[in-house]
Image (cartoon, rainbow, N blue to C red; front, top):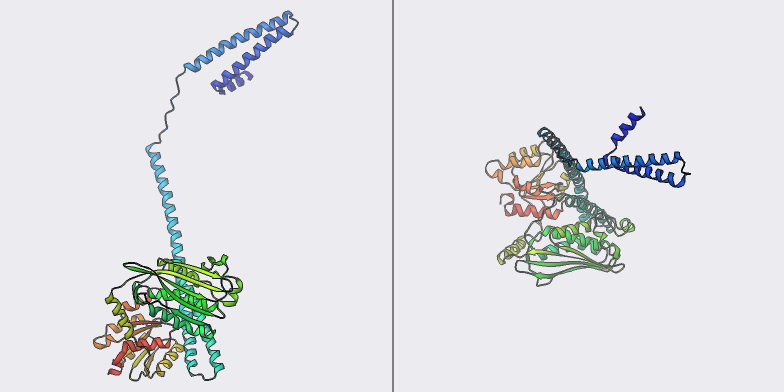
Length: 500
């Protein structure tokens, strides 16, 4: 049993291991033989043991020689690669394909979830915007209407604070919508001729009352060498200047705020213009110069509490400028003021286009109609407060108004009556403004040609284009300004009012 176990273990040892074992046994036998002769009393027993050890050395050497010879004589083992069979390859490829398909499906599902989440967020923001703008149209509209009739200065001042607070709320709402559009990349820029001076002057006139209210000197400067008409996005330029100017006025308690322009580069087909908005306000520390352009960032928590706001205005400015190939800069000293400036490229236009653009601006009415007598207007609006507001604004100018609470009633009124223009809300029960407009445009004769102005709280991208596609003549968003409403009516109705 012991011998068989030992043999099995020896068989399990590799050839090199067996060679090492034989060498060790030879060395051990040699040591025993010589040690016995050298250190024993050389008795016959010790001599016999020594001779036995010597014989073992000879036998082990013989075995070692045979083992070494057989080791070197054996043919070199050729390791042939084990190639997988066709079936194995097919199964491996099938498994790999299944794994890739599962991974692709997972990616598609995740992308679908992200798109659904983004769409849900957009729908939520659009709905929230609509729901806020609708009552805000009543708040701002009636407040401004009441402001014109107040005589008591204290009452007038209190009402102005209400209007200012409502304007701030609308500014926050617009910032949130712009942030959402910039975050999703859902924003486009137009490239059309516009008068530079008119754009800057419009921002100045818009912000002048706020500057006067704080006792600030407010001015703007446009050098004579700048082209009068350029090609670009005037609306986005106005939005950038408005954000910077409103910020400057907000953070300046005394002193001045001014807007200035400078020609930086004049090339054959384009120009680069630098716009500056400087103030003598609270200033911004050096370590905050870059952070103020990040989303939801303000200089300090105290600034946020004291001056309110979302911290989105400057970040929106930066994104809008950069998306148009420009860059924003900031110089500021705490306690002395800030200087925000940006550079934007604009295309040049021909002399003919320049003259035509300026001519169109000159044709726009400087003042609204003093009287609307003889102009028959069909107001299609489902919200009772907005109905009352529009009627009061139109009655104030002498317009003759008829109200319809939805598209179905509007069609009935229009078929049986004679009107010069229709003010059409878009979101209404039973029949919305889109479908009502399509039906009107299909009516025979002059009935299908009446001017229609969309009045809506929706501000989503493409709304203006959608209104134009179905045949509407213009678009006014809520909350609207009475002057804008009067101008649109006058532009579309003109001298044909009342069938004259």
